[in-house]
Length: 88
Image (cartoon, rainbow, N blue to C red; front, side, top):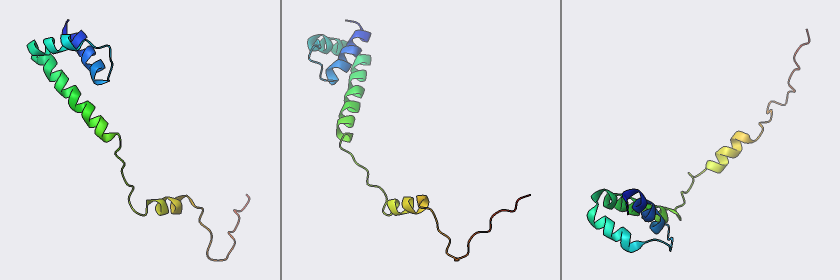
């Protein structure tokens, strides 16, 4: 099994694909440092993504009030009606 095929198999393995040739992957990783590094990096990313899956960021306090104040139409407070533009 060549490096390209092993890397596809590693990706499938980390995606919980049941049709992976684990023994062939293991044998190849024992003799190929490049694919071993690839496996370690993919494993770290996969673990990080699983941990980040439930991560929720809290919005800053007062954000909804600031958004509301920006999108709510402002009313005239002077009591005067605006003068219409002159027609020319």
